[in-house]
Image 1: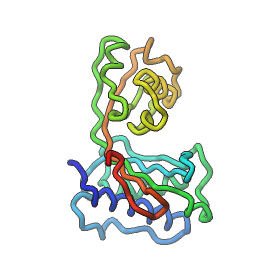
Image 2: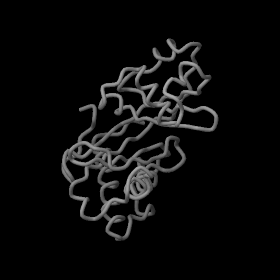
Image 3: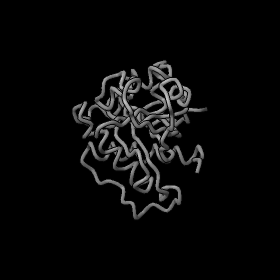
Length: 200
């Protein structure tokens, strides 16, 4: 189900208040208080934290619809702030310089393909996110990554392999499993400021 702009704004506000409260050691919103039906839908989601210059500061989420959206956003927001292994925990002094972004995902679907060329044609740059899996390893890239870094479908597949801890050319020579999904993306234009839908 597509989210309205107002619902997307609510998701970002939820993520922002969760990050602020968690980093400062304050109480986190209780799911029992959520009355909006869309917050109780089961969906995959990611919360991304970025510095004002655009540098990534944390990104964690749930690729598959295993939790209610409100719960998933809350947990992902805390994890992005404190448990992304690539970064140290966010400190209170950093909060005013961080932008919050929420991606609500569609259910991933497996791409059936017979050759690398065919696989490339199935990947829509800027529309599809990818989950690359092989031999117990898995890596995910959100759709907006390809747009932000100007990646071609070939580059996007390569980067998805690297994210999974695989050689970049694994998709060319191995029987990898590739899933694609789409995302509705909402982000702060300024810290705690106006929330924009990526497609607007």
